[in-house]
Image (cartoon, rainbow, N blue to C red):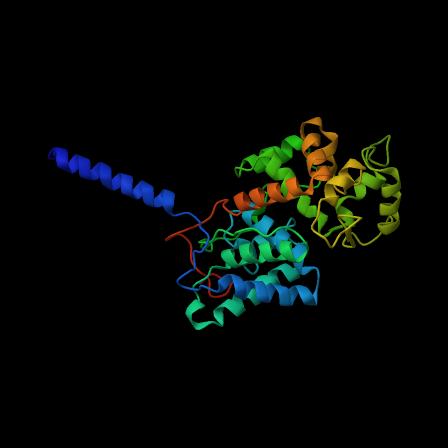
Length: 326
């Protein structure tokens, strides 16, 4: 084998540098569709608003859909693929259909514009729709970075052990979020999204009926609130019956979630632990007392969440139908 000349060596190193640079710069950015589909944000906004006017469930369903998508295989719209796929896993079966329908409606609206057709990924549409439902419920607006491609894999197996569970403690929550580059503060801010939406009785029944052999009701739960939960979720009730996560303002994106935690009114163990654990209590108190601080932290956290495991450039595809691979 011939020896490389100095010029060839320099060229090879430079080529590697360019390759590395292209990988680094193949990131998300605002205004990604400025040339190919300049009105994409307005189109998605109008479609989401129309869906939201039909049913409030649009908001929490879309927000939860985005979170579940990003935590499994990254933000690649793999959650949207029709069965058999991620959505069939027990942790995803409770995802409300209105979230899926919101993305479908927005995708159809985008593709009705000739120059936009098959130019915008389902993953980006989900990210934009998520911002819109936050705003529609009174939450902060924020710039959405775009440029994601849709993934080509979606399996039930990939969901296993990749989503936080209602019974998680702080260490388990931090471990799972840190895996995706999200800090404890990010995790607490994103948990604040539980100010919207609902949960099924079966997800927290142990806390109000059989917490331990000696204590039926979880002592970290507000006693009066626990009795109210028992009335809404009596023994033998259909475990699919759902109640509001936030008992005070379930239709408004605000900091009531954190005020509820201060009063022992976190529905899941994984909610209440944010206040009972000394390591996270100060952040809960900050967000409860300063809504502006919560809103800023949420913007930072959901922006970071939107970067998790994204496919860009030549990776992935832009699906013609969000529920099927091309």
